[in-house]
Length: 539
Image (cartoon, rainbow, N blue to C red; front, side, top):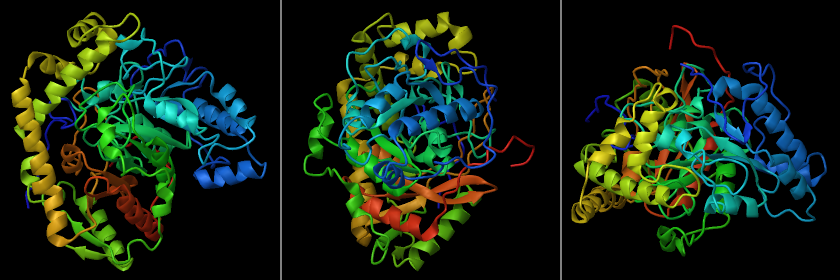
C-alpha cells in the first residue's frame, strides 16, 4: 500500500485541485452587518436539523410559512455567522421572494419556500454579486440567472444568499488556504473554530452544518464538495460531469467541474439533485445526460438498500494517510457488512498509484482554466478585468486587500504556462483512460461491484493563514479525473472533528450511490450538529 506524503494542495490550479479582518461586503446586504462578533447557540433553535420533508409538513398544516422560515435563517446568520464567516452576503430580497411564494396557491414542489445558499460562483440576476470571492468582479452585473439559480427559483426555493469559498475556487495560490477569500475573509469550521472548513466549497459546508439554511450548493473540480462535506459532517453529492448544467457559473476546469448539493441528510441531498439536473443550453456537456437524469432521486432511497449490495474497499492510496480516518472507515466497513452488504476487501483501483501525480493533470487544468477564465472575463458586463493578465495586475494594484495573506502564484503560473491543443487532448485522454476504463470501471467490473468505499479525507487541519493549511490526503481524485459521481456521508468523529465515508461509482450511477449512502446513514446515524468549540492547544 502506498501512503502519499503531504504536499501542497492538489486542488490548486496546478495541483488542483486565523481569522482575518472582515472584508466590507459590496452593494448587497452584508452578511454580518450590525453583529456583536458572533454568538454560538446556547440551545437548539426551533428548526435546527429539521429536514425538508418535516419543514414542508409544517407548511402544509399551517404551522410555518416561507417568510417565517426565511426570517429565522436571516436572524441566525446575523447572530452566528460572525463566528464562521461562511456567508459572503445575504440576498436583500429574500423576504420579498418568500412572501411571493407564500402567496401562491399551490406549492411548486418539495423545495417550495426552502431557503438555500449558493456558493459565490453562480450568477444571480438580482442585487447580489457574483465574484468567486474576489474584489476584481465587484463591478460585474449579470444579465440572467445561472442554470442552477434558475432551476432553484423555478422549484420555489428562496435564494437566501451566497457563501464564502477559497478565492477563485482554490486557484489563486499554490498554497492551501481553504475557505479564504479577499471578500469574505477566513471561513471557520463550526465543529472547532480553529479548524479548516476544507476546500473551496467551505462556506457552503460550514453554513449548512451550522443550520444557517435548509441546504446549499457547492462546486467541485477535485474534492471541493466531498471534502468540506466530510469536514462539516454533511452529505455531499459530486455528480457525474454533465448531469447538472454549469451555464452562468464562473468557470474552472470544465472536464472535471461538477455542481452538487450539500445537505444534512441524504434525502435532502437527493431532493436538491432532482431539482438541479437537466440539459442546459449553455453547457454542451449536459447533452450526454439525456436518459440518465431523474427528477426524483428520493425514489431510489431504501433503508434496506445495503442488503445484497457488493461494495469494494479501495485501500491502496486512499487509506494510510490518517490513522483517525482509517479507524473510522474500518467501523464503517463493519457497519456495511452488518447491514447486509457483501464487502470485497481489498478492491483497489488498479491505477490509484498513478492518478494523483499524473503530469496530464497540470496540462488539462492550465489549458481549460486559462481559456475559460479569459473568455468569461472578456464577456463580462461591468468594469472588471478583461483577461487573466488583467486580473493578475488588478491583484497587484490591490495587494492590500487581495494579497494580504494569499499569494497569486497559482494564477501567475497558469498565465505563464502554455499548452497546445494536441498536447491537451492527449493529456485529457490519458487522464480519462487511467481514471475510467483502467481505473474505476476496471475494479468495478472485475469484482462485480455496485460501488467503492474509502474515507473521504482525514480530520480537518488547523487554519494557518501565514503558511497555509496542511492537506494530509483524500480520495476524490479518481472520480474527479474520470468525471464520475461520488457521495460523501458522515462516518464518525476524531476528537470531535468529523470524518466522512465516500461511495464512488461509474458514470450516471447516482441512484445506486444515493441508495447505498441512505441505507448507511440510516444504519449508523452519525450526524450531529456542531458545538462551535473554541481553539485550544490540543487537537
